Length: 245
Image (cartoon, rainbow, N blue to C red):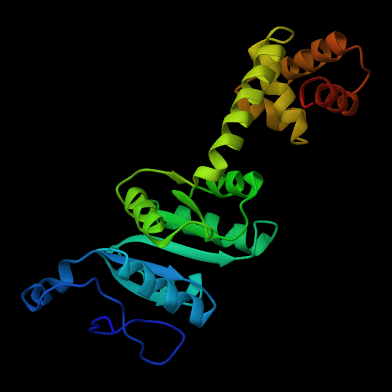
């Protein structure tokens, strides 16, 4: 069994953290060793994950928590990263998106990494839109997982290899769409179109683009004229039909 020391905060009574293998002479430096928090509401999974990561070379102290809120109660700047294992959950859960977005906002200097079974590219994109530094598929090996955590903690960003081809395709499609749109609309009109897609009224669009509301109305009229439509709703449908195929 791996050596353990000190204590860890978790929802189970007085558990102990998992420390990397090291000699007795290194124990005096415990307070200087980097700390990684693992958040997972499943006791068996999080303990097995912690042991597996340390056994595969993770050179960090690992502390276990069942929820984000419990980690917050013990949070301090000594954590170098947070690994959140969401299992089969996804970002369709409003509460998960809200909690992660707030966590990123409150602790911008602590990289957050996700471990999940869902490998759909939309899930990965949603995660990075929230500001995480890594999205790890549970299908990869523990050694790769250790590398991904180390990369994120060092300031990098990790995406599983099985998502790279899909990301390349999305980038290619996005580049092609942007080029086709720029052949018809001005850059400012494209900004207005993007805002219309989000359902924003002229007043908000004007504020966000630093324009007069009357100028926004002119852009909307020009867009409708180019698309040969009569209202904002038709603009959205027409643009989607033309460029989101």
